[in-house]
Length: 450
Image 1: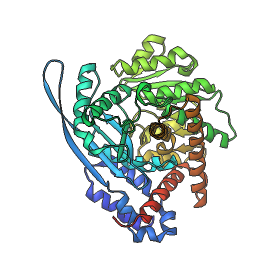
Image 2 (image 1 turned 135 degrees about the horizontal axis):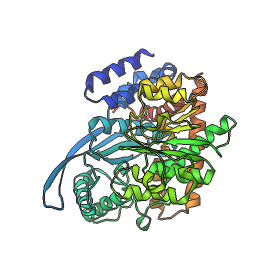
Image 3 (image 1 turned 135 degrees about the vertical axis):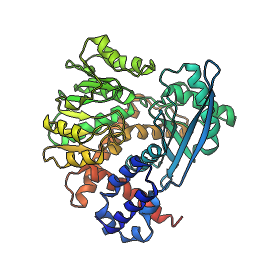
Image 4 (image 1 turned 180 degrees about the vertical axis):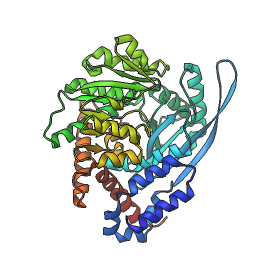
């Protein structure tokens, strides 16, 4: 490894000892960059790496709200405006009880390169709160969102920072957040949040975009291997909006999703979740119930449910982890390899530990694709929503979907070309890191030292 890269990684480990997720993603990205740094000594001279691993700004704030019984609760809110070299900060808000600085920083760091891969002018950021919406009433969620935005609104704007949704933050939460922003600002700045409802500036296809984009990415990888997506069996983890989008597009493409998972376990539907519009639509009902249980699907459709387990031992053509970070460790990776799965397509943010990822990448007959590229369709369509807001236009679902399809094809192609340029073969993981980094690094270099 390049000596400069090694020193930066050691600096990060020393400074951020209490932030394991952040250290993990820094190591994963920087370990791919040795050939780039060797070819661009000017980046080291300008200390690009030590600058890029530190957020431009990050802040926390108190979020106080009252439940339906009149009890007062206090949560912590976060926003990490990580890098704005190529555009306004852009990245989701996550409401989940495990949200902490390490998770927000790792997500924000990944977002820098993911956003760069889209080819659109958006920088990287992330935010959220240690608030768990599971089991909360509509009124409680509304009051929390209003309190959260009352603290955040001073630091965001269409030309500054444009948050979106993430885990625990869907169109309902975005609606409450935008309503409070509008109340506080007294202005219609509908480009300040994305993932909005269709009645007030949202983009068609946005809720499905991450899942749709992941399927377009998979289709392009299969095409490179001379294979068709039709008839492929896919094991998916998660059952939220991303898994729903995967299943919806799989239904259109003729692929068969056979698993879903949640905190309570996983289901195995050998006939296919994605073979019935009723089944696909039921995922939305599960998401809106606030029960956070995948067993509900098993109860409704009479399929096996495996309590407390994850679907990594299931045989399929493609594995698409789409739930949460570090969901696949080394032992799970070994089970995936033992089942002869050729395509490992990350969809959730950093779903694989570095140890497991390195193991999977070493398998001669396996193609591994990184989440920062595979799930970029979500933020890509968010940026298209921003463009529609700026132009006061509403594009058809077909127009948005066509642009998303082209974007994902270009991400696969750009990643493959970047890896080839540095003699790495068809390495989609290294290629995505290199392609995203080079765009941001060059912008930082051209803008001078600050």
